[in-house]
Amino acid sequence: MPRKRKKFDLRRALIAQARRIFWFYYRPKCLKYHAKTDIKGRTSWMCVVCMAVINEKKNAQVDHIVPVVDTETSARDWNVYYDRLFVEPEATQILCKPCHSAKTRAENARRKGQ
Image 1 (cartoon, helix red, strand yellow):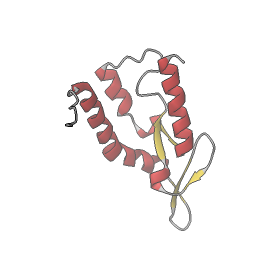
Image 2 (tube, rainbow, N blue to C red):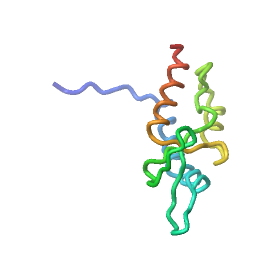
Image 3 (cartoon, rainbow, N blue to C red):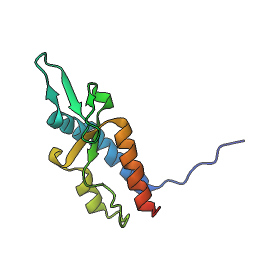
Image 4 (cartoon, helix red, strand yellow):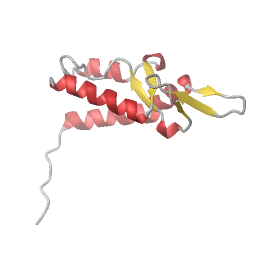
């Protein structure tokens, strides 16, 4: 039985592409901005929630202090979305994976009104 093809959603495609751009171009800037280097030249980051030291770049999650999608209205005006996604490194914070997941779940629950 052939798979049913999903209808193309331009809005979702643009959002996915914008997030890819953030990941490849803005994330490294944010990681460099928040990095701490020890005497031996090793780079690490600190989670701002649990204060855990993160030694591997792949475990350091860049989080927007102001959520990209507003938790109160869930409105996705393109200009506001892009302005919130592509912010200066000072407007981001480093979280470990568990803390970032918990924060994201809490924001999604607030957005959905739970």
